[in-house]
Structures are given as C-alpha cells and as structure tokens.
Image 1 (cartoon, helix red, strand yellow):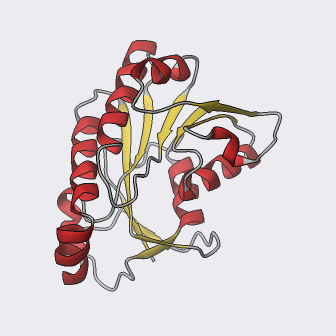
Image 2 (tube, rainbow, N blue to C red):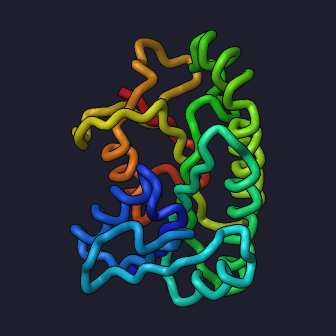
Image 3 (tube, rainbow, N blue to C red):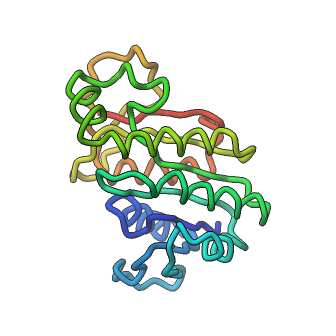
Length: 207
C-alpha cells in the first residue's frame, strides 16, 4: 500500500514511518525537514513541505492509497486544524478515501477520562491552544465525508512497543494510566489504515 504520513519527523510520525516500511508499505514522509528522518529505504520517499502550504499538500497526496496525519505543534496551536484542512481538501480532490488522524485523549467525548490536572492545568492553561487545535481538527475530519479514524492517545512515553494497551474504551473507563508509548501509538495508527473496526470512530489509547 502507498501511504503518506504528515508529521513524519515527529516523535510518533518517525516511528510510524519505520514500522510501515518494516511491514512492506511504500511510504511518503511529508515534513518541513523531511531529510531529518535520516532514514534510507528503497520504499521511502521523503518530501519536504509545509502542511500549511495548500499547493504542496495537494501535490503530495496524489497517487496514494491512504493518509496518516500525525501533526504536532508543541504547546502551540494553529497547525493541526489548518494543516488537516489542506490534507482533507487534497484527499477529496484526488479521491483518496482513507484518513487516519492522531488527536489526543481528552478531546471530544473522551474528556471525562482526564484527571483534574490534565483538565484544568494542562489543557485548561498550559496547552489550551493545542487542545483547541485538536478539537477543531477532529471536527474537520468528522465532516470530511472520508473513511476516517480519529485516534486519541494518552500522554506519550518513550517505552517500547508492547501491544498490551487498552483501546476503544468508554468515557467511563477506570484504572487507566493515561500513558502510552509512542511506538504503541504508531503501531495502532498504522493498523487503522486497513482495519475497519474503528471506521468513523474515535478510539482512545492508554495502558
């Protein structure tokens, strides 16, 4: 399968690219500094570009079977939603149907899963702009008319891929650690490219 990953040099995007290549996919890695991947593979095509550049995104999406959006912007907003808007427009134009989008646990109806610290301090103050960006991004994906899956991971860790995490739990779930490794997030994102279990759904991820 031909995949394009937006945010390919991010902490999750990089692992996703590596795992996709290991599984035999042809991967286009789109990022502002695509060369920063420092990865050579016969099935890898690095593309340097800005997701806020509509024309660059339009050109990059053409000819792919699926798109994974793993955009990051640190504590700031203003990248995920506008960038995803350009991705969606390109997919609609080129008739690419499958969109897997990384969001965050706490967005939408998953907010009850968060602790007071995450609700009031992190997303309420320190990461308010980033949280709003995620919310706007999710709304765009939901309204896209595409075959989408929105993945909501908990806080990232640097641990290895374990496969031993919970996913698709209800907003009333208990005993979640609210943590998950970037490697496990990448593996779950990649699986959604071909798995219809969570089509048009917003599964959360946490240990």
